[in-house]
Image 1 (cartoon, rainbow, N blue to C red):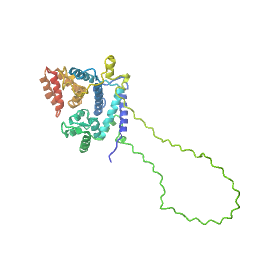
Image 2: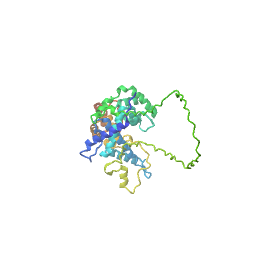
Image 3: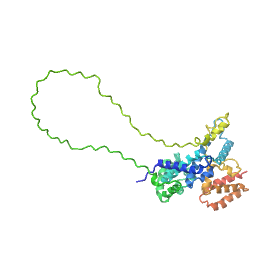
Image 4: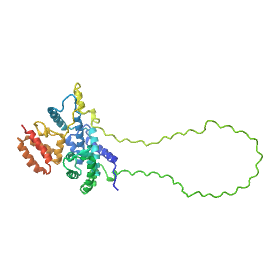
Length: 403
């Protein structure tokens, strides 16, 4: 019988651990904030940190999609270039106070535990998301935020036909079979829980669902094949009755019934205990901070709202894919692309990534910069089967040195 784990218990543990870690970090400095590199180092569990970053990307995307207007041409090439550049700069200005960071951290802990207990759950929520159909290339975009059992997910995507959309249900059922086949390759649950246990005690048993309370059995009714009736003994002879008295008429019954009307019983119900709501990023910012689009509207009260009709463009589209010449690689790389490079090319080392990009920005021409990538960096980091990410970096170099 397969063990059932409680989602509510994972959420409860996530909130407790997030509160404990935030107490340790923000306790002496309640007004302190975190930037992007600090988020990537916040816990010793890399998967938790990556899931926080993934949620941040969702918030960042939501801010960008609100910048729409029926009054201005957001499809103009210059506007799209300026907007992309603006959002890229904004992505490097992450500033998280405790009230907005703690819910993200709690959710990341919950999701990490869920992925350790059920990899198919991680595949469904972290790679598929809300999509009804997906190609392997689209699913691969989510791999940059996975660390736990990542080789199993990569090997699954390698089995799918390239550029071919598949239905969501088919992908989930097929991955479930793949998970069973690769069970020996999954990271042992005990080792995952041990990494959490160091921070806050946790055992597998504490994540089990509570067994349902057995219902009280109704009292047993006696069963018999038939009544056993003893014959009554003969009654003794009764004496002769006395002479009847004169009949006295009985009073007429009252027309009003003396029986009280039946009152329907009010059913008793157990009050539900509402789960603690997760605070949206914009609603829980300390000091009453408001989202970016509200600030822009407040600064220009006479201007119309920029939140109505711009067609949503994929955030992953950066200046590396289209647009005029870029002045520096650092300014051209978006938050999505930057985390992809850090995780896929630089083994999650933020400082090594920044050092490499800074050095590339100082080189005199495209051929020298490309040679540094394909020879020095490729050999240093052992870039095997990283062609997709290397090509994106080389395209950025072409844009920087184009005339």
